[in-house]
Image 1 (cartoon, rainbow, N blue to C red):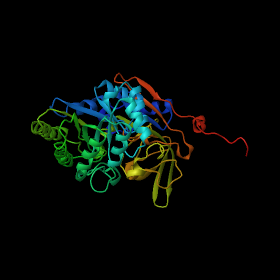
Image 2 (image 1 turned 60 degrees about the vertical axis):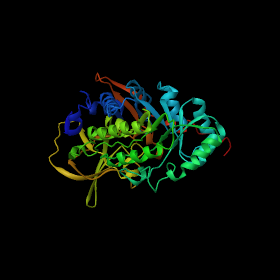
Image 3 (image 1 turned 90 degrees about the vertical axis):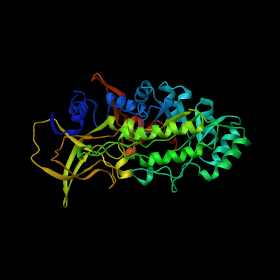
Image 4 (image 1 turned 135 degrees about the horizontal axis):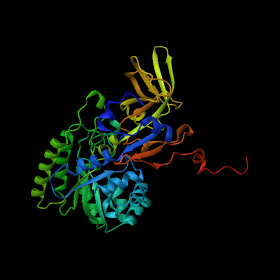
Amino acid sequence: MNKVYTKVTDSMNYFEGNDPVALAEQYQTPLYVYNERILRQRCRDLKQLVTYPKFVVDYSAKANSNLAFLQIVKSEGLEVDAMSPGEIYLERKAGFAPEEIFYICNNVSAQEMQYAVDAGVYISVDSLSQLETFGQIAPGHEVAVRFNPGVGAGHHEKVVTAGKKTKFGIEPKYIPEVKALLKKYDLKLVGINQHIGSLFMTGEAFVASIAALFEIAKQFPGLKFVDMGGGFGIPYKKEQGEAPLDLKELGQAVDQALYRFAEEYGEQITFRIEPGRYISAECSVILSTVHSVKHNHDKKFVGCDCGFNVLQRPIMYDSYHGVEIYRGSDVQSEKEESVTIVGNICESGDILAKDRVLPEIFKDDVLGILDAGAYGFAMASSYNCRMRPAEILIRESGEVVLVREREELEDLTRHMIPLENV
């Protein structure tokens, strides 16, 4: 293999001695590739965030819910949160006990709440009306409530989950109404939670948000836990030298806040965080084959088989993903040039990387789309009736295992019912 542009994966020993071109040939592209070692290390990073003894890391399965992925997270001693009955189901399949699952619902039916009650998991509601619904179906039950202390953060307005412009959580001014509903249905409030947004790269907003959350917690004696949320970011522009989130600095600030609150509250309750992206993003690369190189007016387009059905983040959030180039031949790239890398979906917005300066790319090259483990496959679809890709895992030993089969044409009609008479 000719390593045309591989700075990031080389620095991480990402492929553990495996040839990405050979992987692309064996498993076909597009292909999600996961690295077990990196996944485990990210779990350990966050488990060691603070010294406070009663600290739980809840992996946010919405970022990546592959069963093998969840099994590894479980083996590292993390717990999980869930956003749907489907996530609860998968988490139970992965070996998580009900008490290790925190179901954080948003605008759901009474039937869905009942599923979570029957599953025996911790449940959080995020509006007065949802608290009322919960009280009606599960009077006397334990419950958690999601508050919106007013501090939000994130890389895009669509992922800011607190503050004045988001649908999530209950405003602190409604605390009297929360208490009234708890009393009305004899509910026991065991926890409060928040989430300010996704992909913060400095800790100031997070630390400010937990200070506000702790002021709310002080108004509810007898809590078992406070869930501080997540949003821990990763550097998507590694090849440009973007610095990672300073976990040591953030951990020290959070640690001080936890001990201080426990002293003021009079009890060392459990504190939780909900990182999804930080754990899963950097452990995945998408391999994609270049099928076309062309000029349209003054732009050069590189067309590959990784459309937004495979990776939605660029079209959804205008997000950046680094791109690497692997080549099966000894042909050299003699120059660098500005190219726009596009997929195979019939939409003008199907752009992976716009005006990116890279070594010359040729037809049949294999591209590596970096940091695709969070909200990658989890958001994949069969749009344009394209099959969702396979997922493989590179074990710590370097062994490669298939953890999800590539969909086939027959899967497109698996749940369709054709008309008998037309």
